[in-house]
Image (cartoon, rainbow, N blue to C red; front, side, top):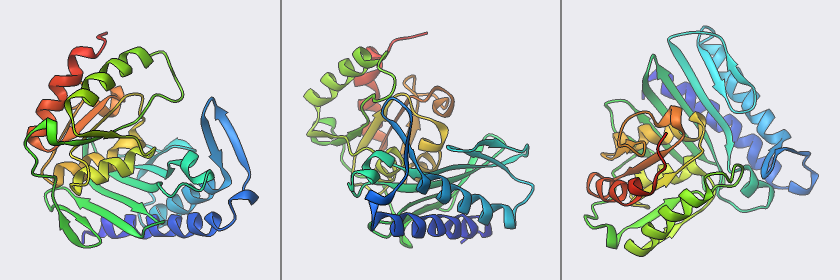
Length: 262
């Protein structure tokens, strides 16, 4: 395991321990509403601080882009952090949430960790070295037809201006697949695509920390990642579609005509 990935795993497990302890008494948590349907808890903040401390101890000159504390520093290396993806699930005791940490060198994602503390599942990837779940190599699914595919998604829940666009996509995907699932933690959904548990995934309105680690996992597991034009601008646009190569192409063809341009 690469030294930078080893440190990221250490940071993710440190955050996971904080989350697991808090999960034993969710009613005692202090919860703040950032905006409509967007919550932050003391757990998010404490987990993020623990991650940053671990990373900065080894790499003090690296920049940080984190969900709760924002952007810190300037460097060719940037750690992209979501300390608790799926906060709404967490505060309801719904065990579908994860820690997500990625490292970007210039414009290239190079390291990825998605850690599910509820199931103790650790997804990792280093560019060019494959993707792993608890040290076991993982690959995207081999399904070739969209009609046989199980597709993940995320409903708009903060900004509803694009709801009609999304519902048009949802209608098409639902009618052309074996099923659609919305579990509420995009980083984990992307990891599931890498592991072949989902055949594809799409969502709009995401932030870089929701996507970065999962995107590299999928690429290293043999899958494809793009925006709704099939290009690589997803971290900026917040619009992402992923899947195994054959499912990616069919899913993109299904949702792209429904996407509003400009």
